[in-house]
Each structure stands twice: as structure tokens, then as C-alpha cells.
Image (tube, rainbow, N blue to C red; front, side, top):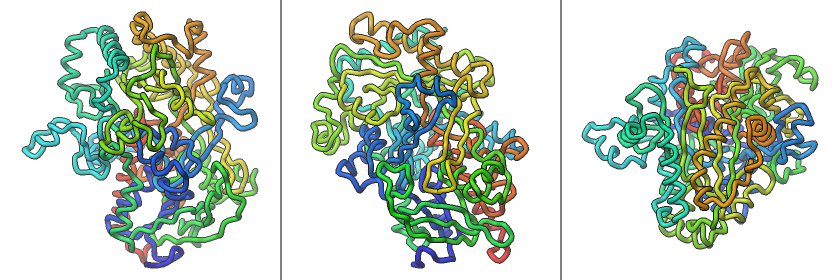
Length: 623
């Protein structure tokens, strides 16, 4: 096998997450030679809590805080210090914790594993924006089939062999998906009451409860990814499919390692490799990447190294693809001289291409918590210490059952806010019941999950947000520094009508209607946050402004025309630069769906087709 710095790699890919890892695997599988860099190491080693923090679905919050694989970004939600300081999670001079993962598989190594497809309109919108029909939802569905190996619809999995399959699922992809909640919850009276009363309260709120229940039964008992035969997207009570295999995390990391073992001559994985800039040839096209070799070089690491790292360069015969995510991809472009000219000049970086959209248009979903204390601890969490060898871990280890086989989500409800009432709008609220206390990210947030076994959180997620005002800017010209990130929430943003804020307030009221019977009966002892004293639209809006967070950063190198702030064309190519593409969460013009991972897998598969088509059309002598 050629050395790491060999010059005969077809593609150099920076970042091994949902975008880069998926793309690298597909290209190598198709016969191309791929050099894949990641700044982290192996997320299943390097700490006493590993591999359990990686493997056990219920441990994902602890993976976010595991020093062996975590990057601690600190971001701002507001430029104004007075409003920013009202968030109790904010740390003065630093910002609010925004966990990212460093290691093979990127953020798929610490996420909650939820696999939910974006809405069809998310794809159709890109098709309309670009004039490229390959983005239409009907065309994009095949990429979902290429990814998914659905294991949570066993009847239809069997019947598909005789040609019966109304579900639209993929059955032979590389990513297995399973149900998140085990049957063992039926032994917990409190949890059964929560599920029953929530479902009953929600169903009674519908215009036609009986008809809606029949449609729900016919439509897959809450399968949010099933093909819809009626117009519109899924609404109602659902479960959250997980990217697990035998109720153990399995995904991009495993796909890459298996493929590298089968085809070591095609896929080289370079870990502990921090990309510092894109290299260009004499005609201005991307031809490689410079990187520093060494562990924990990026200052987002929990314990960054003081070592300088060893400089290397790797060359690509065909193209360079950046897949570092919504924060690191725009940072790397700007460090390479591509971005807003004034921003580059301020840091002494020669301007190769003035492309103002780089680092603009940053978007996220607003999330908020409605937390409660139950009258007694959850029976299904009895003995849980969220550690190796506790009773629940032993049950998971022996039989892959019990609550550790779940990510903690007991129930999901998808609905529309009044802002999404128009026929062309998609459902925009996802409310998820978690058997834990979770109110956003701060140092030590996972300890709340371990130490408070009598908590119920309804996590509210506002999708299809209107705000497009977030930015990623350079802190310095040092590639080891984190960029400056500001999402410019609510009134600071571009949602002039305040529809996002109104929608989240509506969602809190909706959750309170669902939990009212449980409070009245005493199963819920008290609402902790926002708390019963916080009522009225103005008070609830203040709670949302002060405590909202997000963890699906996207759209900072968007597809679109450059004169409209776009950075990429419809085939992921950077405007004005040959042989350079971006394939990660930053490419979306608008943040898609509820959970972004499935959408990123899909665009990575689409990008692989685009690159392979280009390779067939362009002999190496021409490139």
C-alpha cells in the first residue's frame, strides 16, 4: 500500500462524519482510491468509559462529554451581552457549550442515533432553487433506499420478497435501523401511564379522533419514515427509529473500517490529522490538503495538546472534498483564501476568491425543555448508574434489552404550529418525551441524567426555522483555533415576524396540555422548568429566549447562486474553484426536516454519484 503522502489518490476527503465517511466509503467501494483525514482518533478507545460510551445507545450523553472524543465548541446565541448573559448555560467570555465529536465517524459517534428522513419539500426546494431535477424528492428517495437496512418493520421486511412493500423503506442498505423503545417499559406503571395519557390527550385534541387513530394504525403505528399515500407529511404520535444494530450503535465508523479491511489499497484512513488548508495547482484548481499530524491538536479538544504537530501534504489526482461540518468547513475554506475578502484580509490571509457566502446563512433548530419531577423514580431505571457493570448494563450486554437499548426517547409527537398552517408548509414541531432531565448543553450536563432518575423532559424541537442570520467567522489565522460562531437568535436574526418564537411558545402550551392529566392525578409531582409561575405569552417567550439551544448546525456553505449568498452549485462544487467540493451539513440552503443526520447521509450518496459521473466523463490526463 502506498504511503500516506503518496500522490496517486483519486480523492482527498477532510472529515469522516455522516458526509465524509459515507462519501469516502461509497467512492472506495466503486473502485476509487480515497485518502480520508480526521482530526480525532478512534471513538471506541482512549478512555476508561470506552467502548461503552460509544456502543450503548443510552450512553450517548456521556459520549458527548467523554474527553477521548469530544470537541467543546463555545458559541453565542446573541451578540448583545445582556441578553446572552440571561442564559444560565452561558459562560462569560466563552459562550454556550456546543458539543461536537472528534474521531472516526464524526458526530455520528456521539449523537442520539435518530434516523428520520427529511420532508419531501426540503429536496424539492433545492430542485427549484437550482433548476436541477435530480434534487426532486422522488429522485432523492433512492438514496434513502441505498442507506437504510430497516429492521423495525419485520412483517413488511418479509413480505417484500413476494413483491409487497407499501412502506417505501430501504431493506439492503449499509445502515441498520431499529425501534428505540424496548417492550420492557411495559413493566413500569408510571411510564405506561405517561404513554397512555399522552396518547389519549393528543388523540382527543384531533378534529376526528377515531378516523385519525385508524389512519395511524394503517400508516405504520407511528413509523415516521413510511411512505405516505395521502398528501402531506407525517403528523401525530411516532417512535424514533435509531441507527443501531442489535441495539448497539453502529454506523459510519463500522462501514469505513469494514471497507478499509476489504480494500486497503483503495481507502486510507488518516486519524489525528488536522487539515490546515487546501492546496492549489498552477491553474487554481484544488490539488490536495495540508495537515498537521498529531493527537488533540485542535483547541476544541477537552485537553488540547501543546505539541506543534508534524506538517504533511497529501495530493488528489481528481478532487478535494471538504466534509468538516457547519463550523469547520467554512473555517478551512477561509484559511485557504476562499471567503469574504474583508474577513480574510483582517487576518492577513491572501484572498484567492472573494466568496461572501462562506460562513454566512448559518442555521439551527431551536430546542427548549419542559421538565418535570415524577412522584417516584422510573422503575425501568432502577439501579442505573450509566456505567459498565451496573444491573441495566449487564442486561443490555447479555440480551441487548432494557432501557440501555434505547436512547431515552419514550415517545415523539409531530405537529404543526400556527406558523406552519399554510398548505405548502411542513409540520414544524417535534416534541419528544425523555426519561431524564435534559435542558441543553453545559459542562456536566450528563450528570443530571445519571443522578436524577425521577425526571421527565419533554424536549421541543422547532424545525424549518425562519432565521438565516447565523455566522461562522475566523478567530485567527491559526488553524488550531476554533472559529467564532454566533447564531443570532430570535430578534437578532432574520425572522422579522417572530414566527419561530411564537411556534416554540405554542409548543410549550401543547406539552402542558398533554401533561395536565398526569399533574392532576399526581403521577407528575411538579413542573420544574419553565415552572408553573412562568405563564402568559410574554413570560414563556422570555423563557424561550433565555434558555433555547440547538445541536444541528447547518447551511454555512449553502448551495445557491453566488450573488444570492450561495457557495456551491447543485453538484456540491465550490463556485469559481475547480476540483473542490463540500459535502456536509453546511450545504443546505435551509435546514431540512427534524434531525439532520439522515439528510446528510443522503446528500453524501448523491455526491458520490456526481463525482463518479464526473470521473467517467473526465480522464485523468484532462484533470
